[in-house]
Amino acid sequence: MKLLLFIAAFLICSAGIQAQTKSIKPAPKKTAPKGKSIAKKNVKKIKTSSGNNEFEELICYEDGPCTFNILRGDTLVYEVNAAGKHYNLLVVPNKFDATTIADFSWIATAPENKAGHITINTKGLTTSKKYISNLPAGELKLADASSIWMTSSNFKEIAKGQTSIAFDNNQPESFSSPEADAVTVAVNYKGKPLNLEGFALENKAEGQPDRKEIWVLNVSTNLLIIRMDIGWTMQLKEVRERRTR
Image (cartoon, rainbow, N blue to C red; front, side):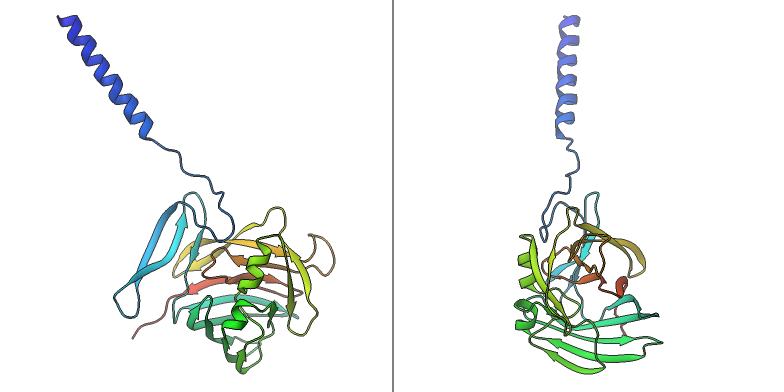
């Protein structure tokens, strides 16, 4: 009888260990295409201005970098190196919807010392393939171009491999995705270090003359340009939280 009880206890324990082993799953590998989310690891939610709803501000993935949504009043800080000048470009979104409007104020610190306000309408954000990179001081309303954000048209085409882009008054150029298009940018996100996930596109292969490259945040609801090298460079280095009184 003791032997039978021992065997029964052994079988029950073995079954329990086997069940525990089966429940353990490895972390998912990052294989999601551009603009598609994968297993979420860390999500920070905030309330909308009405206070009735919440949406995800910051999304980080298992064993991977992060993406974020645009919040009104936050400051995007870009480091700029252009024509021997080194300064910060401060972009403050006033209103943003990926398919409707981008309204933001901006300040270029010394030695550039310029400031302005830009509004990009629905047409500029969705169908345009032109970008204003040299921001003019003062008020600017765009219907045939974008700035700071990639347009839906370019995003849809680059997902298939190739698209056409024009900067300022220059002629359009063909851009494509390099073989390894996944990129990350290290930023200070509201006081803590964070790696942002993006994808790259280029007009020429690395090492060729007059090469241009753009890195875009990998989330279709916020196609923010996080790095640009088009003869001069700008790269996002910090996101500052809106100051409340």
